[in-house]
Figure 1 (cartoon, helix red, strand yellow):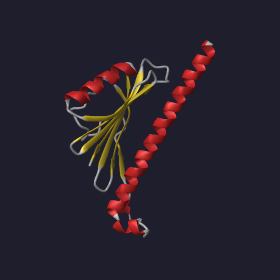
Figure 2 (cartoon, one colour):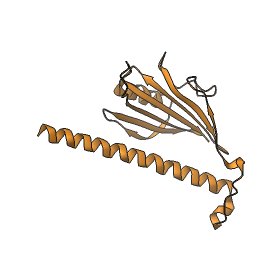
Figure 3 (cartoon, one colour):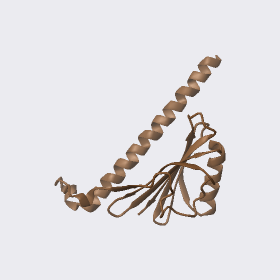
Figure 4 (tube, one colour):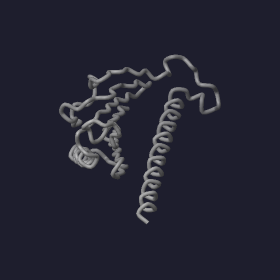
Length: 169
């Protein structure tokens, strides 16, 4: 029975992770499609989008350093090891993403960022919480934010990985 319950919990976790991945892909597809239509009204009549370089997003890598224009009011763990830092410039939007390893648990980070979003008056429209994966999505003014906390699978002293993406429209 315990094996069956463990298998059921594991299966449920994979289903949730799969649904989360699919929802991210759908969100990205809708975002890209709406951006293409906004850039080329002719695309709505089935006319091919101009493949000029001006429509291509521009990605800038910052390595293990926080991007210079990453919002300074978002709390970051002191001394955290940054594994990814980059910005992507779209025609009329900019995405800033930061991924770091945390010594805090997923639950501790979820509580920290949920409280931050609430105190800063973000409109949290989607939230998910589990032992191995938690996320928050919110909007405020011309910004949207997606914060995902996941289990760290490395053998280091970190307990979780935190990914923060901010989109400025």
